[in-house]
Length: 209
Image 1 (cartoon, helix red, strand yellow):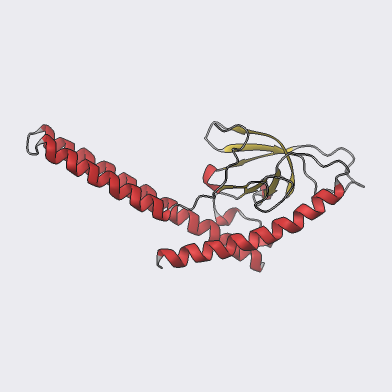
Image 2 (image 1 turned 135 degrees about the horizontal axis):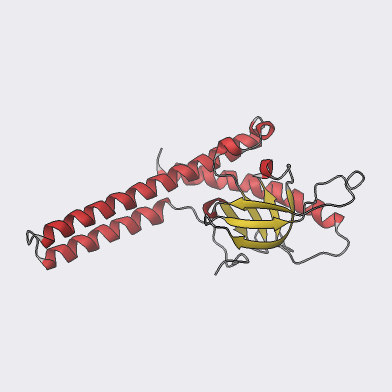
């Protein structure tokens, strides 16, 4: 599958997500008497949080494994049966956290979309829906791109190490070695820039520098 087809599919999938987010935001803002400035989390990894799907974020931090920890107050609760709603904490891989800055999707809030590490981690009921299938494809495409980028970087590192060995043995001159290194670095930059699909935003999540 060519790169432009992959990017087109990702674009369509993200558009569908924005539609869902807009609906959720309307529900959230209606329930709050006093709107807050806290970002809203849409948690597609809710299976580890008792299916608490969305709510305002209270704090973010970087966990020991490098994942982003997010503490949020769930809003999809039954207030009649749950008088004391406790905050939830979820850990999201950095490459599975999408940030839509204010005015991108919502005119009032920054929106965080949190996805699980793998499509298999989505809720079973969600997987059976059409929207769930879109999510699964989006997550697996992202994982495939990340794996390919890692393979390219690993391969280039091995080539560089091998070339250095040859250079140390005086098989290659320093000028030739420098030229080869520059070519490898340029190839990695080109491949990475073409395959990475990072959201464009000027918003910096709390807890990240």
